Amino acid sequence: MAQTYRLDIITPERQFYSGMVEELVVDSPRGKMGVLAGHVPMVAAVSIGTIDIRDSEGRRLQCFTSDGFMEIRPGEVVVMAQTVEWPEEIDERRATEARVKAEEHLRQKHSIHEYQIASASLARAMARLRVRRSVNID
Amino acid sequence: MPGMSETRQRIRAIEQTRQITRAMHLISSVKLKKAMERYEKNAFYIDWTRSIIKDILLHLGEVDHPFLKHRSGDRTAYLVIAGDKGMAGAFNANILNLALRHITQTQERFVFTVGHMASQFFNRRNIMVDVEFLHTAQNPQLFNARQIAEVFIDLYEQNLIDRVYILYTHMVSAMRQRPRVLKLLSLELSDFEDVRTEQGNFGALEYDPDPATVFETLVPQYIIGAVYATLVQSYASEQSSRMRAMDEATKNADEMIERLQQEYRRARQAAVTEEMIEVIGGTNAVRRADGRI
View 1 (cartoon, rainbow over the protein chains, first blue to last red):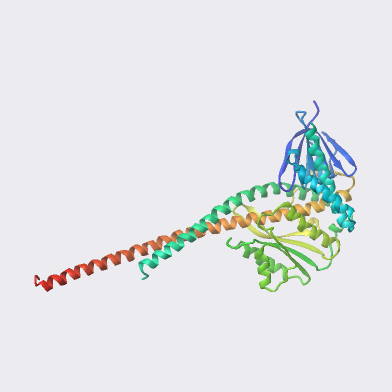
View 2: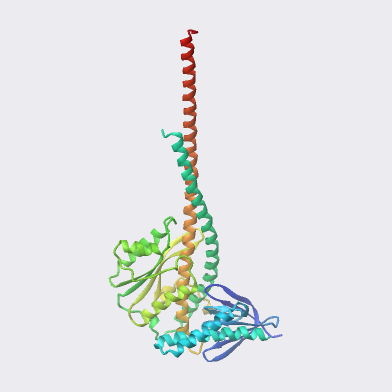
């Protein structure tokens, strides 16, 4: 059996997840990043996307995350993000609407700042839909 | 001595007030319970973020980031968090008086307020309120915090302000609150003295992709988290103060009703006695007229 470590996922509004896991995969600015037990201590940026967890009983869990960061300590990982949601908590229609709105915003050329806001909200909408749909197919 | 009907009316009026204060007491105790739950969840997050930021600050001599740079100017932004309503004991007065003391120390100031009581307070004293964040004090949500944080980050990045302070009511415990000043920007190690770190236990941290990028994403998140934390704590403090104030008011009403009821009973007794005297006097007069005495 693979070694496990303690994972906590927390947001300003709630303690989202807490438990023993074998593996954690997050989206980082440089692509997917996996963490197994015994990882070197590190602070890493987490991008908008999905978090995949394989817990100590071998179950696979997936959730949506907005941008955040994580701290890897010996035997323990803490992920901190603004919002993290389980697939069943995602409102698909709202996410679709947000996607349409963000795409519309991106088409109308605004300032750099507005562009950044719109592309971030598009990324969030796409990630939410991805998490939501991957569960529907299962 | 007031008449019977007058006393009865006063009793009725106080009973009505008592019903209101009792209802407000119940409402705020329910709200306080919810607010405390949110506060506890948030405290966990904010403690972690603060400890990580301190870790990074401790090990990050060379990173040159605008958020870290102490600016020598005097342009200060204040975010004053009070309630939308009064009737919460000294809650509003405490935080607003502290705010006034701080704000009047600086010449170039920008005042941001949360809660009607704060705006009214400054308007009465002819202090200009630059931005009023509406609909935030009564049920602070994360997106309120995000909006507020973005305003400050924007102003700071455009070099329009030199530092940001939040004046809020800190939850010491469910029953004890204290108005407090929190420095939001720029970030300095000295502001994190109360934070414990566990980092020393396992040597140097690595950063992915690099310290500057991590810091770049971490700081705005910390600021949003900190604004949210102060909003939630102020909200919980307000509910707690109101709960106590209304409990006190209900007790006072009980006392007053008790006193008035005594007064009423006395007045009633006096009226009865008087009537009896009149009746007896009348009977005696009749008897006397009949020549029986």
